[in-house]
Length: 102
Image (cartoon, rainbow, N blue to C red; front, side, top):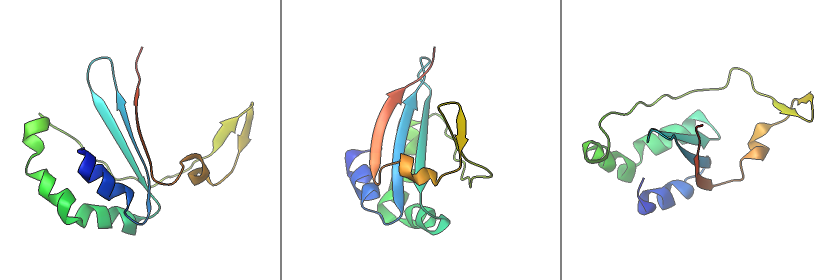
């Protein structure tokens, strides 16, 4: 995502976090978290965001989008399961990139 688009995303009400993970093979996985389905739909309908869709072939051979809602979530910490609101783990409006892979 461009810096301008990320800046706009970070100001969107209901945005929680954007994380980008890169595998050793160059594959990328982006995870965008929102507080609600309505916040996600607002991003989907954002004019700047929609304008970038036409440029996707310049950057991607293919990409897959999957919108999900949690079925079950919990935190496993110090050998114990903690049932907590996990949004506390994602500081509001956070964005970062990380590597993964073996």
